[in-house]
Length: 234
Ligand SMILES: NC(=O)c1ccc[n+]([C@@H]2O[C@H](COP(=O)([O-])OP(=O)(O)OC[C@H]3O[C@@H](n4cnc5c(N)ncnc54)[C@H](OP(=O)(O)O)[C@@H]3O)[C@@H](O)[C@H]2O)c1
Image: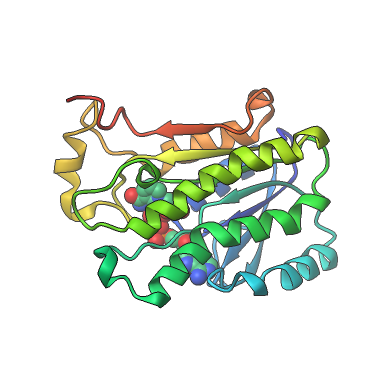
């Protein structure tokens, strides 16, 4: 999907989402942003959806696609939410929202889009280092579990949709500043990266757009880590 085409982008308001939209536009594509925020700069069309309610996604999304005659070529799931707390203090609502926004909504969005994506369609899910490691500051076991689930989806759906020519991959960012990142402990986390730097939204977006495009036509079912070599040193 290197030429113009529609990208459906959840988390379009986040810094990763904005960097992805900017890069997709530079390639000549258009962006349908998914957000709870109706006035969203940097996207062509916004659909306001609360992804913490996955059962309410398919109908309004289908309506917007049909009304706008939008045939999606690509999908990026950058929406996410985390409630950092010890496991026993995680409330039922926090657990439900974490699983719904990070994991279930990706599954529902892809199922709604998949029949409308032609051969060459490509999806990228934004995972997290938390899928593989537990942070010392601000634990969130359920967030890590949701991101690990997202990475499993990538492998299963790559096999299920591969025969129709559709690819699916994930990008796994390391600790970042900004957004839900490691703002208070930035220096400490940077110190654990091979080059002593935190991951940026622009770097994550570059990897996302690479995986979406024809340059990555041989890559599916993979998790691409973008983390400046975090935690390689012992
Ligand atoms: N920052 C980090 O250190 C880091 C590290 C690794 C991975 N990540 C991942 O990168 C992605 C972006 O993270 P960020 O730090 O940029 O986060 P952020 O600034 O907190 O943005 C979160 C995004 O998720 C969307 N979202 C949250 N709850 C939603 C809901 N109920 N319905 C619809 N959309 C919802 C928000 O959209 P609206 O508020 O507009 O609805 C927003 O665009 C996430 O998937 C996150 O897990 C971040």
